[in-house]
Amino acid sequence: MHTKLVEWTLRISVAGEFIGHGVFALQAKKDWVGWFAQFGVSDAGTATQLLFMIGLMDIALAILILLRPVRLALLWMVLWGFWTALLRPLVGLPVWDFVERWANWGAPLALLLLVGWPRSLREWLK
Image (cartoon, rainbow, N blue to C red; front, side):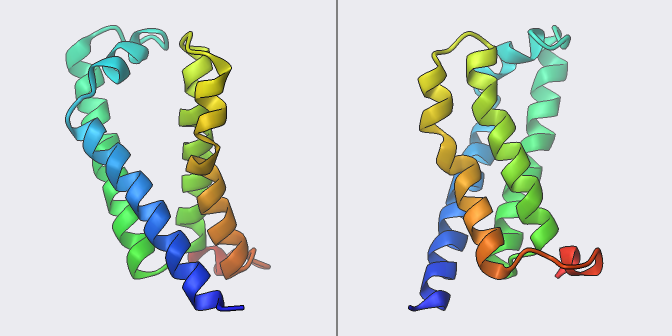
């Protein structure tokens, strides 16, 4: 098996997903701004600022994964990808919007498992 080829395929896929969502966040995607109100952030300006920060973080993580698949970053991407997929049915979209986005957390999880689940706290930073 060509492990390096699989790793790079996953790294590029994960980066593409997070860059894409990061750019949407930087652009303050209208639907996403509206979802903040359902979680107590009713001011559109505040929601837009939060989305901007989230977008920057998503893009930074995508670049990091292209440079080096840091396990802690991948774990965050798994959790964040799961949350943002789960968010869809929580805001009233069909459950299939969640199912459709399983790759958003599944791809970073696959990459994390491929590079190896850490055996110590120190390995989370490698």
